[in-house]
Length: 112
Length: 114
Image (cartoon, rainbow over all chains, first blue to last red; front, side, top):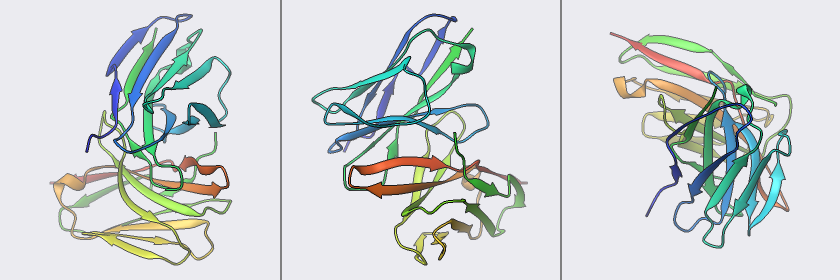
């Protein structure tokens, strides 16, 4: 059974640029959730995807967007990067109807 | 965004000691989850709790779902060096739309003093 994988591991961007982060869900899981974890804090929910549609969104602006593909993998896109977007971005996969979410190793984004 | 209150914020203990930490919320959750996160890695699920009053163990770890559904507790017995890390609680509500978001606590950092 393959766990949740994320790419890239690290990324450095400058203010105003756009970034795409990728996530492959755990084998057998159909739901993907994205979280932002600022340094020294707990993860904050960005949004969740199920059946290729957004299924719930946290308090993040529209420049945070996502996609889910037929194989359940997902992308997180952030436009017009700001310095405060620097964080660890975590992807979690689960199965609809089951409460447990399993996290990937994260992508560390630094915005200069 | 909302974060649940975890205490203590940090703990410095000696190997072999028992550890207790808790998590409180102003609102009710249907599920409580406890995760451990090592530096530079994603959170790893330790224990999941589904029912008020439930007590669940996973090896040396024991967690409880508070009766009010607004709190949860995690105990670690006979701590070992690999227990070092940050422990997060997470609450979840479940609706007809499926699994809702996880709301995380502020974290408890566990350090073992040699």
